[in-house]
Length: 78
Image (cartoon, rainbow, N blue to C red):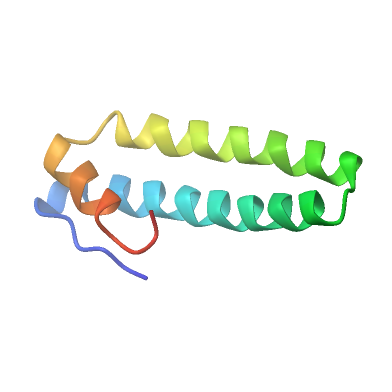
């Protein structure tokens, strides 16, 4: 999915933030599967990945204006 930035100069950071959000969503899905299967080791692994990917997402969104972040958060990815 591609989200077009309100201001074109922020498009690269918006793309990077979305990329990390997608990675976070995938890791979160895997963490949920591991949790449902009572696999503690895999749950811990994907929990760490979720933390890292969300931190990366937040680092990119911290560099964006509020309207760009709001646009990402209103998308179906969030």
